[in-house]
Image 1 (tube, rainbow, N blue to C red):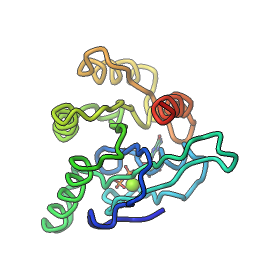
Image 2: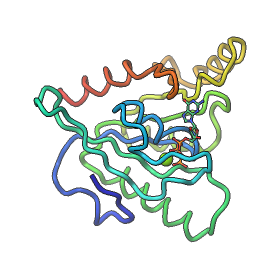
Image 3: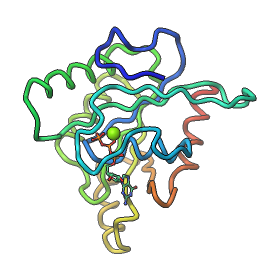
Image 4: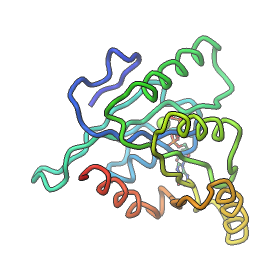
Length: 190
Ligand SMILES: Nc1nc2c(ncn2[C@@H]2O[C@H](COP(=O)(O)OP(=O)(O)OP(=O)(O)O)[C@@H](O)[C@H]2O)c(=O)[nH]1
Ligand SMILES: [Mg+2]
């Protein structure tokens, strides 16, 4: 739909929005592509810090069976390289979206299942709770873990969830797609 480098370019027409939040390289853009089944729609890269604008994707079905909503790909945080001025600008952009955006229904907070919670993720989680923004936590790249790593890694992630649900996701395998669609349709149709 559009790429916004500043809040005055956010879409003006109202529609429910679901934001993807997470560290650089966690797999936000890959999740969007897998969810809608269009490879290359959201630009993905092995190099972190690839998405630098807020990208809005309009999703719906031509028959109107699916109510229109938007997936919102936010720039990743925690990316160390690059000029400091860029980092300040990205942070201001993300803050502006998350603080003021009325259309935001909920966020998908993505955690790399190999790394678990990192300080920046915890800060984001606290920020979402402080601002009463609903969110669902998604553990990404679970195809990269063997059975042992899977059980210990996921247990560590769940430990900080206070019983909240954890969605397990793999872009190449498509695991988690159904659960995420289920959550989205529940929220955008009510
Ligand atoms: N094996 C595996 N690789 C993944 C998965 N999701 C993403 N990747 C890879 O991880 C890298 C980063 O993925 P992106 O989707 O670009 O990550 P991003 O969160 O959008 O990154 P930024 O835009 O930099 O914030 C790419 O090389 C992807 O192919 C997954 O579920 N499994
Ligand atoms: Mg991206």
